[in-house]
Length: 266
Image (tube, rainbow, N blue to C red; front, top):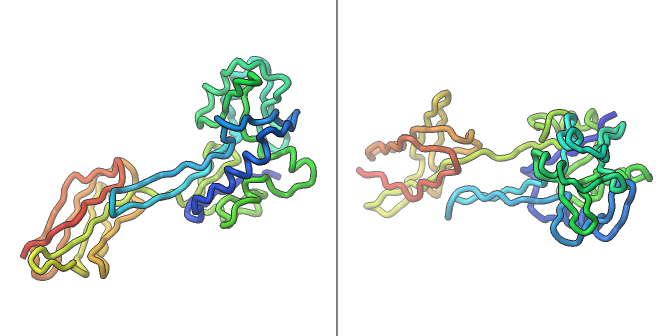
């Protein structure tokens, strides 16, 4: 049976409990042969990253927890000259602190940047999946156990099948799956510059190479086109009864776009 982590970004509130629980479990605690003690600073085997989209006042924030994916095709294993990196039968990839030669090749090879070098001990270190706990009767690693919103859950892949709909693994065959990572957005506030009032119900049409999306401005004069693919180019038209149509061309979603306050002329 294969156990995995599922991280639902839409449920994450950025409380950092998972990151703190990981530090609490591994800092100054030697779990050899699973892992030597993690230093107090410089390493986050579970690291929450902040992702800010847009500009004031059209701003959105989401958080993503990162840890070792325990890749099925692990680049770290391929480059280790000391054969210190092994895959367990349950799929977890561990660095044996007693065999690690401290060459650092695995740190450079990791495509996800989640292997750290301990300068004090001269060894490489990373997430172990809390296998020292799982092997001794615990049902959960510390990170998932500490999550108050079930944004980070751990369990059998088969048992999580319903929750995995729309999710993707960080690496093929890996143990870390993500879902609901938001795409880019295009938004603005539409208003009447003469009456100095927002325009409610204006029709907004976003046209891309292979898609046409439509919405209307809400009671605040705002519109949002959400979860757009990155690095696409769009044309936007805004129309309302009694106003001239407004058009924007070549809007790129290299990043989220706040078009600001958009006046409609009569």
